[in-house]
Amino acid sequence: EAPSKVKISNVNFRNVKGTSTSQVAVNLICSKAFPCEGVTLSDIDLKYNGEEGKATSSCFNVNGFSSGTQVPPPCV
Image 1: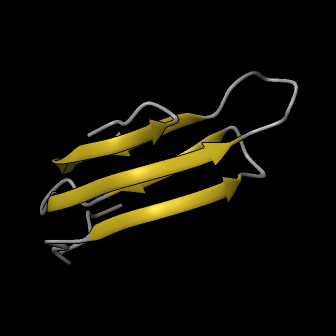
Image 2: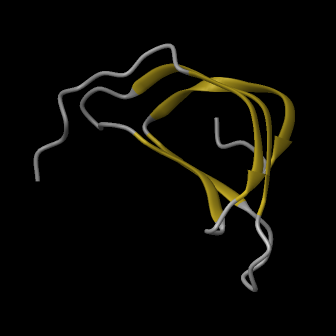
């Protein structure tokens, strides 16, 4: 399958709070050909109450940074 040719830039996720229905509470997937740039995670507080353990983050082809509270630990 060919990678997407859509480029996503300068996206901010701020003050995201709540409960996730899946263990991977933060899941950012971007194109191999055009990775996401300038992604900011600020004050993320997501819980997961499942049997698999604590909430996790997963990022593919994402460049950015995080600040403030980070639950689960950030992947950028």
